[in-house]
Image (cartoon, rainbow, N blue to C red; front, side, top):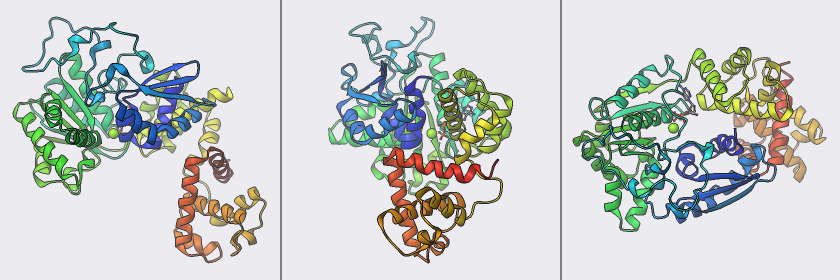
Length: 475
Ligand code: ADP
Ligand code: MG
């Protein structure tokens, strides 16, 4: 795996999936001699990313093993002027459609003809080198999707829609918790539709991008362009529609988009973290339309599916993963697939850094701070003792009212860890630290979290403390 790919796993965690899809995914990436060259599709993108995500990008690269990340962000001249670059189906590097395949009825051919491959200066290399189809994620295909009882219904629905878009289940509404495979599945629909009909016009956006895009179109007086963009498509995929909540103007626009597409028998696919009825601040008429078609849920994966997903992922990454280790991870990491993959990536990275084989004890030692402790529960006193040892303080001091700077800092760390590992309430923690108020503990947590995000060496120290606390219980 390339550094950037590893960094992306970390980055996605850091900034959240939809920000990642909106802002990071559209960047084109080239890795040259350890230097990372990112090119943004528009000035707006470049400035936004530079302002909001550059620090996170650097940090993620550092975590991914790039000691002193040299990141450059520039404008991709080739793509300037695209309204929503990430969604445009860019056939520059796509396989040539075979003559036998034709566009769907009325499908706009787009401007792909004038973008002949090989024309113009060399493009920035694509991540992974493979063709990238619009902003569909190349890896998110049906082939790479592991089916289990938790997702089989949604999967079957997605397949059905991909086979006959616009015909039966319209819209297809997929809902489920974080990291259970919604985005993957709807991307897979996009890929499958494109494979059957390479000229199909597909737009895939996170709902936040839909919002941003509309706002910028409004501002620039380009609503016609915006409407064409979203209404003249064969397949519109809007990811995480819950983010339309409370956005009246966008909801209205989306309502009309929806109607136009639906009347024209164009497929609409939506995902959400909630059932339509449970999305707050959503206009009734929109909610009502979301329920017109088919609603399918995805549950967190069960044990067998988790193991299968890990194995499949390891295989595609060329990683050695023994069944024991796969089972170990799958039994410890249960909430969602994203976390499962994150753990696998972390293990692989640590394994290759240390040159060690990935065994169960190795996995346990690497993952200890992230795992739920199954032995004796950690107490607030345990945390205090460990933190005191580290900072060279006495228990009396950390529980005292004294407020020297170093004492206060150690205390905040201890409170933060107590909250995280002991899962004690704010008042409980406050009480154990010399009867402090719960608001002091909340403040401590804020302070520590902020510093964790900003200061890698501080983070390393805190993680070491957490590891010390958890691993002593798992030996
Ligand atoms: P969501 O959109 O529900 O938050 P994603 O689709 O982003 O979740 O999935 C998170 C990660 O887990 C992705 O890398 C995805 O490929 C992977 N994943 C989720 N479900 C499956 C599955 N059933 N088979 C293989 N990979 C999966
Ligand atoms: Mg998603």
